View 1 (cartoon, rainbow, N blue to C red):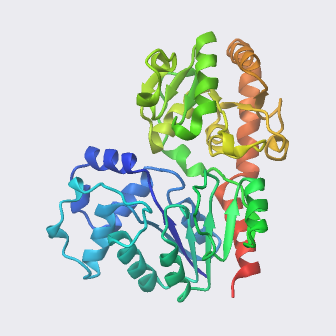
View 2: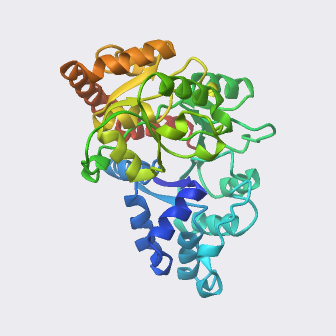
Length: 368
């Protein structure tokens, strides 16, 4: 079968990477695409690369990356690229894939690529009319979500909704939507590009936004009682007196994020409120995948993913988290043994190759 994976990237990341590489927007679509995938942002080309290994045709589209998409449009004679100043046009509409250049170019890509299955990584930001239009020419449209769902979002045009949150799957089923549990994963390829630096002790790598109120409160309490380093985004949202301002080390997008985790003795994790009592986020797999000791909040389904105490370490409170940080920083052999076991579990069960096998099984049940 032929698969098209439709993704969107954070505008701040796109702005940052194209600023760092000011001539990227003059390159061909294929050159830009290869360079962007090599950054390892989000799921990058992890879906398509592993679907290809499993014998299928597949590619990703970054639908809201204007320079990339306009390069494709110019090469397919849809637009003359010299008319646009890409670096001045980073305003992203909401929904991101609305009736504007993103909509028309993506629709043309679907018609050109002629996929059997289209998978959306950002159904919240996708115009449902676009999905309806795409459905007329493909066999199946799937989507994946584990983030807060704003009121009024319409998922009915999708043939299958996937989520790594069990209560989301239940919610979709109650709405009469076909849905399935689908876990996140890690791509071992990133280990070929990580850079070894001076080691860090306890780190948190991730964002702080309006959806992360509990996380902010938790990290502030931890940072008052022990030393942690934080890379990510959202510092400007913190109170002036927040101890996290002292812990903040700057942004760490894509490959830089993996570098920080790779060089960390302990990777701290804390789920946001929508996760409820379920372990779910990407950091579970990113931290264990690069070989850091994952210290995460206890969730009732965590043992289905990793063995607590042997492959990862869990905490129930701020005090316990602080104690565990200090314990494992002073017991290197124990820390390294758990980190090694966690990485082995991730490589054995949580690689994107494994997930794409599971995805193919789901697709085969629903494809027409």
